[in-house]
Length: 213
Image (tube, rainbow, N blue to C red):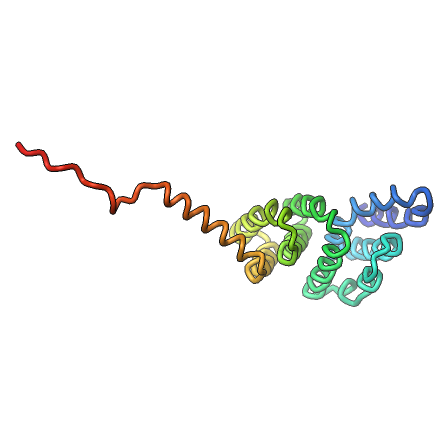
């Protein structure tokens, strides 16, 4: 059923021209996060239909570099490491060409952290980590960095699915290696320091004088 839905949507690209183009582009952008996540679905037919749909949509999106990316080896490979290579390349293109879409894209990916399919959870986790590791948008980082960081820690320790735990660890590594982690950690330390300063210093408290009897 999922494969049929993606195939039908891809076929609609033939009608996304002239007066209908802008409206159809909005539908593409709304569906793009799911297409990217299901490119590495457990169901091979879903993978193929998502891949075909992306190739059909690329010319309509008019973003240089997308068509070669959607036709690359890594997008067609069954190897997870190739898929993650594709995600990192796609993330760079996405942030460069569609910065206004990042907010809604992050919301969609975070919602997929609780998808019924572990592989889709893992894919959403890696996409989110990739975006936050390279984005320089302070608004996006302020909204999502701490949230995703905490969710990755939770998934690593609590998920019962090996692919989710492993991918969470990989995405966690992306965030830690990113320069974006430096200001985030500095802000955390500042908050902790401020909290500590508000607390009384036991070493500086004066003891009450001994009562003489």
